[in-house]
Amino acid sequence: MEYPKIEAYVLKNFGINLTAYKSKQLIRRLENFMQRTGAKDEHDFVNMLSKDEQLSKKFLDHLTINVTEFFRNKELFLDLEKKIKDMLNPDKNTLKIWSAACSTGAEPYTLAIIMDRLTPNKKHNILATDIDFKILEQAKQGIYNKNDIKNVDSNLLSKYFIQKDDKYYISDEIKKRVEFKRHDLILDRYESGFDLIVCRNVVIYFTPETKNEIYKKFYAALKPGGLLFVGATESIYNYRELGFEKASTFIYRKPGGN
Image 1 (cartoon, helix red, strand yellow):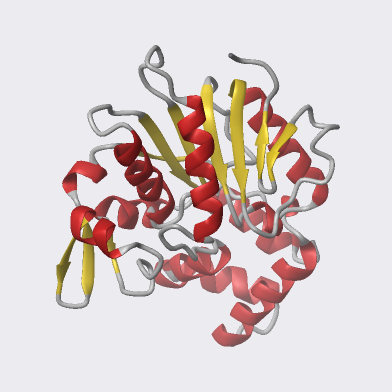
Image 2 (cartoon, rainbow, N blue to C red):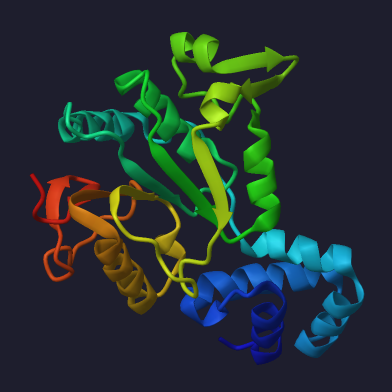
């Protein structure tokens, strides 16, 4: 990291450890934002952030990438649905599911829709976490635009959303199925006993070392037989080394279980 003053400011004020992120991408984002503010150097930039709360919030938004949509890479979610179906049995009361780095909530709500379809009368434990408080508040609102719902089939759209003008509101029934919490994948403790962890399109921003640490923590957080579902550009090439077995191209299983 070439900007120690900015790194210290971000850690102190946002609780985000920038040393875990890929330098080139991060520096590009930092310099792009600094340039737009007209700051002369990093000292000047940190002074500007300290004095201007709105600018500081904008900088946080710029650092935390929040791109999301329902059923992103639809065919992969259909594959996941089959795997979840195989996990369900009459003796299994509820599944414990974690949507890590959930952004504006499309992913955990997608999981809630899948679970409602598979087990209509059963409420599963779906935890959704993100590092960004502002984004979590947005996720709780459950309001989306046309682009966010482009992969949602018309029958699901009519069942789980209410359209008002050009906005789509997720149904209260689906909202109630998800619990949102603030969580930092690098700094915070992980819960355990998960049947499924979904973490997609996030670890691509981390260094290989940080990525490995996160995967190890996910492994420890899963029950034996539990699944980890990653993004379409995030194949885990050293999955055996980490203890996983491959369940599908982007789905990994912790060995054991029934």
